[in-house]
Each structure stands twice: as structure tokens, then as C-alpha cells.
Image 1 (cartoon, one colour):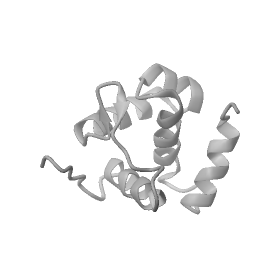
Image 2 (spheres, helix red, strand yellow):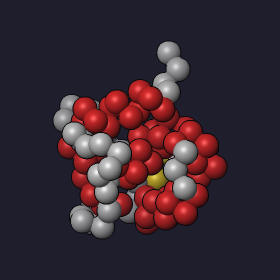
Image 3 (cartoon, one colour):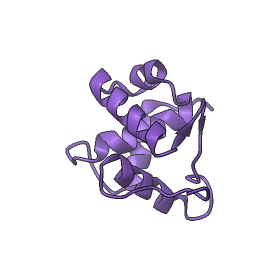
Image 4 (tube, helix red, strand yellow):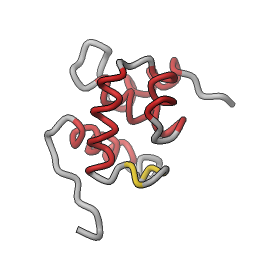
Amino acid sequence: MKITLKMIEKEIKKVAKITPSDTSYNTYLFLLSSSIVGPNIRKIRKFSGLPLADVQRFSKLARKSKIFVGNKLAVEWFEKNGGIALTCDAMVLDGLLKRATKND
């Protein structure tokens, strides 16, 4: 089954309980879009429709915080309690948390 932007938007409302008017909505949209197309700025921009400046800023932060490592996502969003991990990573990109990895 092909995952669409509409499906991602529905998942954001379900997991994060936010709407497009919330300040962190674009953060979740960026993260979940990257889980579909990979950590590629051009592909995330095309899939999500987010402004290029937002995608570039989020991408830089995702690499710095090791959410993106090379051409992969180093995330646990799809594990048990993955919604918590997704929320924490969104908070990292929004500057509310610092992400620690096992190697830190």
C-alpha cells in the first residue's frame, strides 16, 4: 500500500493530537515524511509540501541530533511505545529536548 500525505496527516492527529494550526505540526510532518521518503531534503519537500527553509532547518537539526545518520533514520518510532519516541524527537527539533544516544 502506498502511503500518502493524507495518511501521514491523519497519523499526526492521532499520535500527537495536534492540528495544522499547532506550532509543532510541521515538525511532525517533517519527521513522518522522512520516514516514508528517507532523509533527503528534496524528497521530503516534494512529499510534504513544507517550505524549503523549514525542511533545510529540520534536516540540519535531525543530522546534528543523530535522528538522521547518513542516509538512514536512527529512530525507534515503530517500536512498542514508538509514539513517545516520535514525540521526543519532535521536541528535539523544536528545541525543547536534547537527544542522547547510546554512544553519548
